[in-house]
Image (cartoon, rainbow, N blue to C red):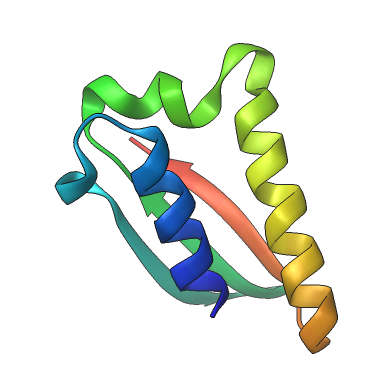
Length: 77
């Protein structure tokens, strides 16, 4: 569910939605969602001073806490 949520939001933000991919892996402190977008769209996902990235992490955290899980989001280039 959280993976689909982040993918949906990211596809809404970028110019090339077909290049968006989200992979889920297990980390030390819970699950990690790795978000990849096209090279030209990195700035749109991160935002000025990281505001959009922070908002994505906040939404992810709220959704995961509802289910009693812990997720972290990594934006990869």
